[in-house]
Length: 206
Image 1 (tube, one colour):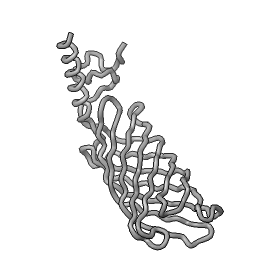
Image 2 (cartoon, helix red, strand yellow; image 1 turned 135 degrees about the vertical axis):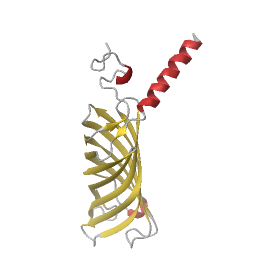
Image 3 (cartoon, one colour; image 1 turned 90 degrees about the vertical axis):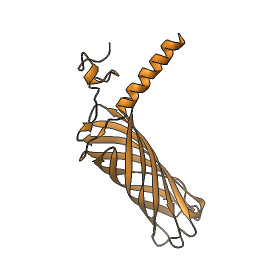
Image 4 (cartoon, helix red, strand yellow; image 1 turned 135 degrees about the horizontal axis):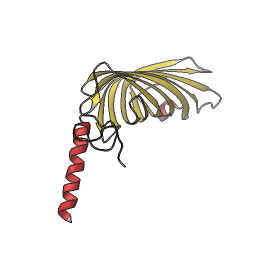
């Protein structure tokens, strides 16, 4: 019994490892639309805000991509509360897409972020810093997927509004559209058996 469990586990890990070798091909493109919730550090004296944005990713091969996104979030100033804020963010990052299982990816990213915050009762402020990303994507077919991610943008001393240091933590969720090809072994019918070893690669399990 124990031996059969170990054999099954070994086969599962082998299949997962083979599938993990799949990655978007060089020149492939991702286009994403997402909703966003942002939380601001105390030094920025802003309440959490809701918004949305769009993303463009160009794959360089080997799971590596250059991504750029722009987002707009509406928040309010804590002091005074009537002072609403419009937060416009632009980010450019290098991202690594690590496939696992069938149709799943973990995404790690780091790069440049620029924040522009327009305040109703004060002059607009801006700052630049380091942006980090940790995300997960599940694909439905070969074109569309759902992507969720957490972002952490860290700023140094960027003027009165960003005095000392400040950070913005965000949660994004939305749809991602893929245009291109994937490299590595494929599982066309998503039954856990690669096409090269599948007697019926066009028929799903059962």
